[in-house]
Length: 348
Image 1 (cartoon, rainbow, N blue to C red):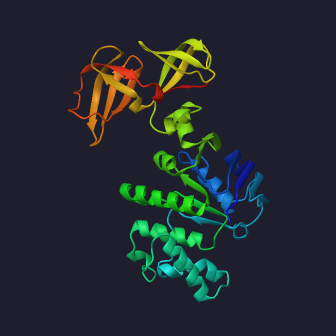
Image 2 (image 1 turned 135 degrees about the vertical axis):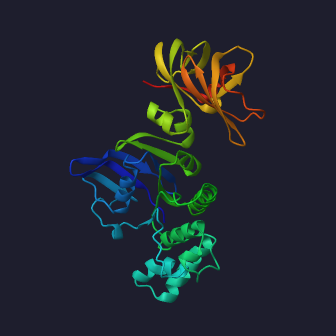
Image 3 (image 1 turned 180 degrees about the horizontal axis):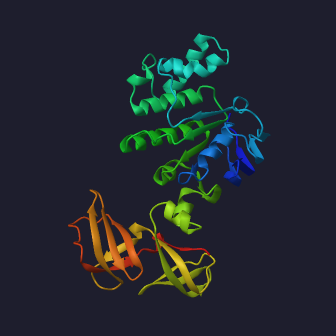
């Protein structure tokens, strides 16, 4: 049975250092919510506070409506999948997964039956007798998930679960985790510093910075409507440039980017200088001269797309284009246009 998780003004201090600062949020039952941010922002401490591996200095932590603030980890009915997987090397796969039920006093036959069910769920039937060293990284990750699921916890926690995998395997395993979470309607708190990973798996994302929450929203909301320079730059690449609101039109505004004018959601900004976030794939390379003049500084071929650095009156901009053809040579002058869907005014 899944449960909600709620933080009410939770603070965690280590001496004079505040690792989590008056953080409040709710994870709805059956949802996957990602704690995202750079190293040292407080996301892993927050996860450990949910698990009971750390105890809050201030505030309340609720799981399924019950106050668990002072409860030990063993009393919270949560399971964690660690970054290192933490599998026992001297045990077989099925013994690793059956470890929790065995420690709780279940008979070996019943514990192994429960473990086999969960191994089938994660697609590892037939590998029960192997040792962890005989498995690939992706298979070891699935064993760790099966071991966390075997006790049927109310909340499942993931701490940087894909960081030990190569890029192609990361995509496959993150899809497996998301599919399993949706299939079983699990309540999941998931920690990562990888914004692409967070966008791919999450129902909602909690972006953290300096021990506090910078913004909470769906992946689309955070990407298309960042609330600050930090969020705009952290969730997907963004070119942050100075612009000007030249006219207000109700909830929309005319903004000027160099020689180019665009109509965009106003987001509370008034006439005057503003900061705009330009997504790299929202910048179009034009050869007709009707746009913002730019000089190509650098061109990089990445197979399915090109990346350019261009110099403009707004500063250097990073541009991504999926148009085929020969790379545009450094030193070439061209013009830039902008797709409105990838340009955002950042609220004051």
